[in-house]
Length: 346
Image (cartoon, rainbow, N blue to C red):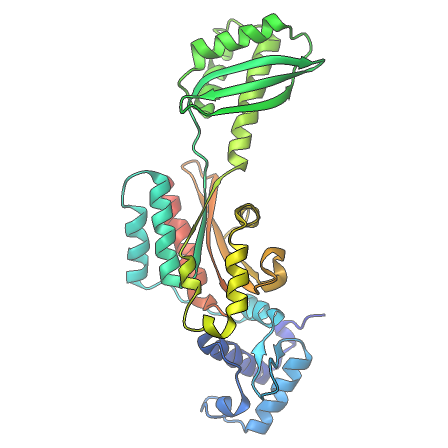
């Protein structure tokens, strides 16, 4: 059972906050003698040791070695992030660096990648971002009968891409209807993106201009919706700045860094993790084993969604680094980057 912030005395809360802040700053266990030298406490090392012992019993601090120093546990870091931490807004030069990359021009995907690289460099973490998958323009959408109630749908894009799906077909669909569908798409929807084709089909059906029977209309709409939905579910993942993870402290913990770099190779799992932050109102923070993927390396992920021109969530941007992150500085930095990307997509 975890201890809540309201269960700590003022003295315990102050000492706990100082231990966490000193640890996040140095990466080293924090001892009572060091804290006793701070004038704001005005306590003896023995008194501080007693409070630290209580915090250890509560599961908020741990002793990594036999030394007197303590470090926050993952539960302690969570309590600090949720209940004590006071965020510091990004400095003007940090905001300018991120904005400059987001506004650099060129393809949107490149601007998003560059802004993520800037975030990576400023936070000294690996930057990660989900970019919406570009919709190919349609060259051809054809259906071939597969068996009772099913057909194979073949989408050919103007970029030469070919994708197949098995779809359920409405009652009454004949091979003639399937051929009719292919002819209609080639004549009326070729050259449009999936979203544009869906809008065009709806317009022509509404205006009575679509020379198709109901089964054919439903089949085209079903095929276009299937691919559009698939595209949204398969965004592009970009990882920037892995080298930032190998800093001067990495030599002390090479095994953890190696595990983290291995974990970063699993792009599908990272994408799945970021997808879980799509519905967050702001930044989502995963600390250590709270996320199964990074449990081995004990790493933290800070992520925030960004939005498109209609206010819809189109991607997620964030950073991955050791649990010893400067959360107060990095959380608002990720939040600012998400807002910069939202402005870019507007």
